[in-house]
Length: 357
Image (cartoon, rainbow, N blue to C red; front, side):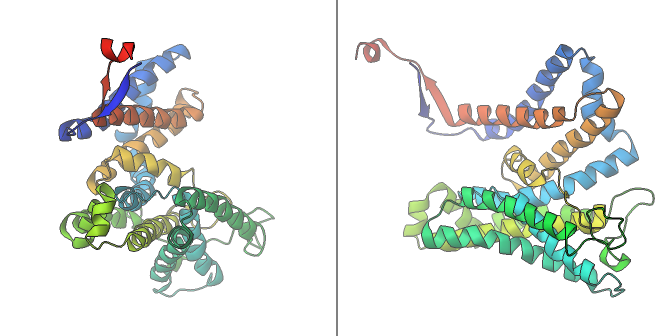
């Protein structure tokens, strides 16, 4: 049997080329799938990957979809660089929407200019509070942060459903689950008339550059890098593992919570039982597709957002099932992990001596 042996050095070029190759092979595989479904592969791939970028409305929708993916992906990249595996960003996203949106529900008649900044701040704190639970259990009881953060997703989802169907339900909503519409003072202003592009996109655009500066130009970013690559050496140098766990989880939770309240106050305008198509989980793909680099995450978020918008268009124009979008994202992750495997390890074939042994 063959075995995998770690490479002594890892090619920097191969590490950055693998996401591009993963996207190309995903398109090729998608063409084969479309052909098997009896669809024209060229036309279907055009609907998925090109048509969303050919119109102003399509570009606007791509920017709106990319926003939460980029924010959450950047937050996750801090933890993943340090070996802290926050898988519960979806729950932190929802917690941020609940915390920030709850302020708009309570002050639904407010016209104060301070309402929106307070919502953004409270949403960030809500996401951080949700992320603080796995941080506490990890540092005090050595609980697995993957399982704890993942289980909290279901807690956040059920809490949101309870609130919008119970105490926060719109009394004038004809019994439908959902809160009151947020007041104008609690919604993000639109940037383009007739489009859904809002001020939150400006925040999203600034986030990768701020994150890059923190990771590349500060001691904190250096500690994260060292702790992720050599934990024992980092501890020997005085880097506190508990502090790194707390800091990276709070950053990831805060950005996920900020993404949640931006989505609620910008795109939806209220709280509903379902406010996310799975941004928190898809952002994991975005983070790895962007090589855990903030600017790479920005490009990866745009690429994945194109598949969302293209998938919606393909459902209407070509009658393709909604599940194809999730299939594309899964194929991207499969190829990306496969390339990562071969850039980190090399295949060693058995020799005659090893076979005899």
